[in-house]
Length: 117
Image (cartoon, rainbow, N blue to C red; front, side, top):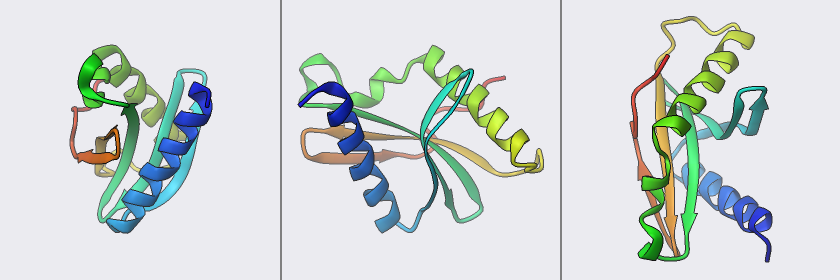
């Protein structure tokens, strides 16, 4: 299986996991010029922007460690654009999460990083 298919399958797994936890998925693979956000959802009062990372095992590090500062900034820029184009107020509660999939284990890292301008 190629990397894109694996990635798509893991994103579907992550979306199903979040939905079981009560998150409403609003968008999948939202893209604009600045980049892409894997999943956008609503968790209670929060608009949640999720990055999904997968590793077969921890040999190359844990999946959540792959969301570095540059990727975090990119996600924030895409999220800002999303909120602007949807007419959401600046006071909208926002959270940036990471769904880390390692082998068959799924970890949900809430508030994985702050908002970067």
